Length: 287
DNA sequence: GCCCAGGAGTGTG
DNA sequence: CACACTCATGGG
Figure 1 (cartoon, rainbow, N blue to C red):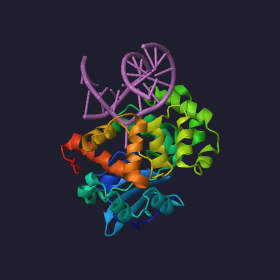
Figure 2: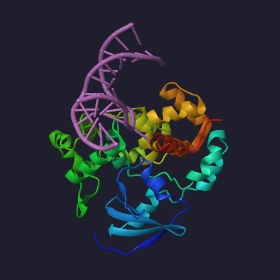
Figure 3: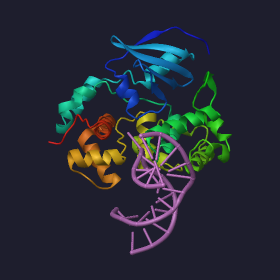
Figure 4: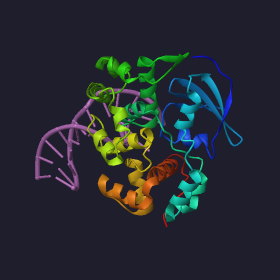
């Protein structure tokens, strides 16, 4: 690890508040000046808006950080095409331009899996605290007070007691069990599975049900057709589309309605529903 | 102190 | 398949 100077990343459109603050990823914090500092792989990066992209200040740099960040922020996603596609939806059509800077992220598969197992039945501030605590306890320090997310082997060596000390509650047992069940090459192999097969294999892991499996498929494995449905999405689907029912039924609704970019639609709707609850503001409304 | 959380697992009707 | 109950804990 060595210090490196600031560089630019061409990526457009992107809004850091929307992308890093919407609750899809948990290792970023917003600085008072509007920049965001977080951990990607073994790099610690400070991002700020700059012209047609981002200015990146590496606080701790790793060899492939530019490529890693580009992948992480899904720089090659053609947001204009995605929005044109989703904009055919009557509900999304009106306000979709306001969230054009909300990009999905593509996290490391392992980090994403554990993060969303921890995310069950907890609020976002607590999820961040749990993940920071796990990283601090078991991950390599890459900068003063900042630790990379622990590898499979790092966590495999952690005892259940030490995991519990991170404030994970009953989730500690899930993490331990996943370390036990998951073979060293399993996640790599799963990258080649179809969405349906990937989903069903993820659901075979302890602590992974319908919703977590879809989150990991979307934010970890980059399957844009995945449409995670949590309490917020149930509210959104009920309020905006008048639909309710089982996970399978709502999934089928989303698949037919939003198609291969359902994941983007999900994050737009998730952000919208949460900002309605927390700030009383919303972009999308029912017909 | 109370409430609830980007649910999952298990048991029962 | 639908529902009920429990799970351990901390941030708001």
